Length: 303
Image 1 (tube, rainbow, N blue to C red):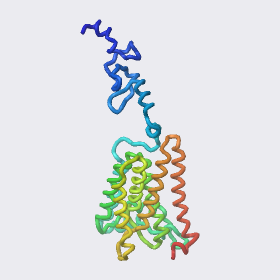
Image 2 (image 1 turned 90 degrees about the vertical axis):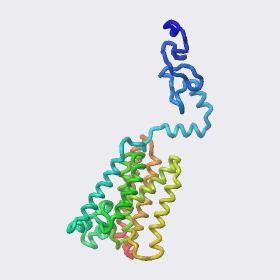
Image 3 (image 1 turned 45 degrees about the vertical axis):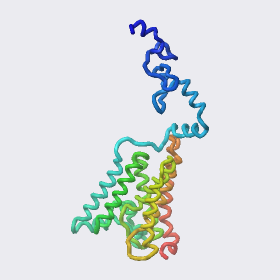
């Protein structure tokens, strides 16, 4: 074909813009379209007219889903590796190594562990509220299984949740869930000493359950794993024995994680960012407010 023949062949030019050369065809009508007229489809691109016809043929449910998932969201995927997850694992592993140092490990454990007595100076003469969070980074130094299983769970859950939520929201979820676990220990196990990140891990389980359900994912596997863990948590409690499992921290972390995830799913739009932050602050304030229950109603927690 000569140059003149090529120029005279209208199929080599966009049907809506005859002065624009193109070699891309609409996947429905097979007419030539320029980049301005191309709309990405499931396979290839479509022209504006075919796009309108396709939209007219959509059911109300399809149009609603398209509007919902095309609007900007506050909960969005973040690029790159789950840095916060790796950082949390790294900090926890470093603390565990410090706990293994003879003559120094007990000092580390004693400085980071948590018991409600550290929050009420009027009764016990000490006030160290940071232990509500530092407890997440210290584990039982008598065996590696406690820290290993928690970090394995954090690695598995963090790889899914952190890219989905973003680093800031994931860290907020982790810390609030851990705080919720510590608050539950205050309310339900006032005389106990606890270590470990289990409260935060259960919060991640709950969040993955809520968020997975919201985006339409198959959450059967998550629900089964969570159910097994709950059985492991409460079975020793039902049958007695000396198993050292802080079911209070597990329960508190789970409930807090469910609540935080619900907030995330209901405040996804960019215009709702301030509302989301306000609700998260309210959750944190509510958890702190619950710490005043023992001082106001000591009979409820001291038995």
